[in-house]
Image 1 (cartoon, rainbow, N blue to C red):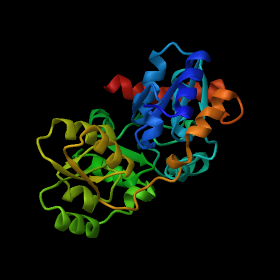
Image 2: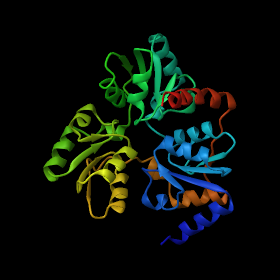
Image 3: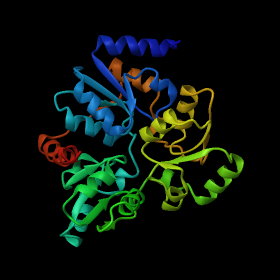
Length: 303
């Protein structure tokens, strides 16, 4: 049963023609009032398909920018203007300009976790689930991969014959998980499978039973016969899986893998957007939007 504030949100989103999207890392009360939940790019594609004139994405800034890139005719709102992404902030136009000068013969591959401005200077965009496939299909054998060096290392090991250049970037929460966490968790839960995100440290990735995107991890659980899982990504996934599969057991790889930016969004901030008293509308100039879309289009063309 929805709470009073959730019921008010549901009523207002219909009245004001809002589509509400929630990233998987949001808390469960936010997921309950969302029209779609999932990974960032999947949500942007859902917004593109739907006819609503207004879209609110409960997540972080780069995700809202991606929605605007794909759906320029829609008004796109971020409930919490301070909700950014430390990984996306690690690469900007001046740094990427220097990198392109340093590696002039490299194809620039950017993770979806980048700003629209950065995407304007990249050759192709990738998601955590598509990165290996996309990079393997590129004609170039020299890749400048930004900003996540952990995801980059994961891709490099699965793309033989290609040369990679990285920066020391990545998600601080995923990167902080270590082999010590793996050892401790496996000792506590010896029958559990370890499922991790490729943003984790390479030593953690190599120790895992499964490596994949957030959606990939959740789909793996759905198809598995195992009853216990150690989850190596943002800890909200432990909570969500517990709701979906009450007869199974889910344990966090690290109690500290919590994204403070994702946790900024509350039901109150969602309601404020609907009532016109809060949030921020995401505005992109058309030149930036068109140039940013090119590297996304290349990703889609490569499948």
